Length: 431
Image (cartoon, rainbow, N blue to C red; front, side):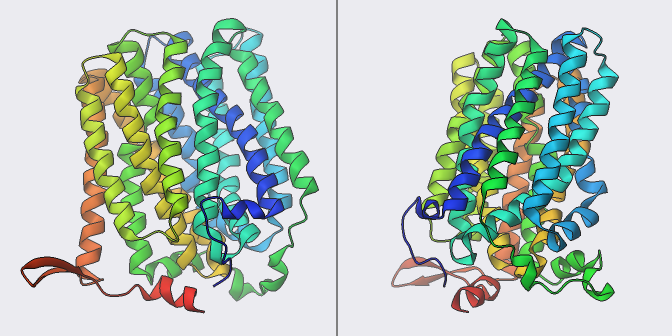
């Protein structure tokens, strides 16, 4: 098995991985600042506290993940991912600049945000599978789980800073300049990618014949893998009903606790502290297992219930930390498990499907969550999100029972859990 080094931070021994994580950290701060400012712009300046409008923006931003899934995954498997990521960052910066200019000039309207959210979603649809598979190329198969967890930790650390910085910036200089700041952060990623020395391993991937670049290959591959199908079903429910944090947190902050932009940004940052904890715990493991997905999903559902019932702002913030830790445990484990068990030549296409399933449900779930929040109340909307965690956990358990033969046996008066080995992951590790 490649990557024999041990320790939570072992992937940082790789120079290019260090550069990538550092640049991504800065860029993700900008991304979270823009997301927070965009939600605040829609909720308080362009609508009358409409959770449905926020849900529509979310839906439009993630709809391209579904519409473009076949093209994005195939492209990530057959082009230089470093150059692809550089081009995508240029597109994201352009979208942020346009949104910033129309906001600063005072001409911004709700349809502007809708259109630019969709454009940003198109860029993200191409960026996500390229980014996920590029990280795996940087460190090799032996450290994929650790690299994914550390990359997720940096993402969540940025999430602790970005929303709070956005809330403060909105109060001091206005919403539009937050979008400009995000555009500048994309420039950091481009500069770092130009300095990286990673070998383009696509040279070792046969590509070019018509039969080898079929768009449906990724779907056929997933259909043949019951383990990946189970993970993707879990992610679908989590992504559709459980991950609508932009709706949950904003309407709870404004409509239930009657807070302003600074407090809203602070809530998002507080949840990210829990997410960092979950990501660091995942980085300590040698590799992820299905039990981590099941446990994370169950804890997520319970924490969402507690948050929905929270009587005060501070207690709600505390439960948000639990939500962040459990969600990140589940998502990081799912990412690592899928990448570790997927053939390298198929990784880009499989990760495109992974992202499409996780985020592609948001166009359905975000408007639904917004409607529930507007008509039944924000607390009921969070209860809807809680159901996603429990459903995902049941799917994982069903897979373990039906495919892996999970059963409880009694030996020497004590219960013991027995399961069959996982050939998809373990055979790759042995090889």
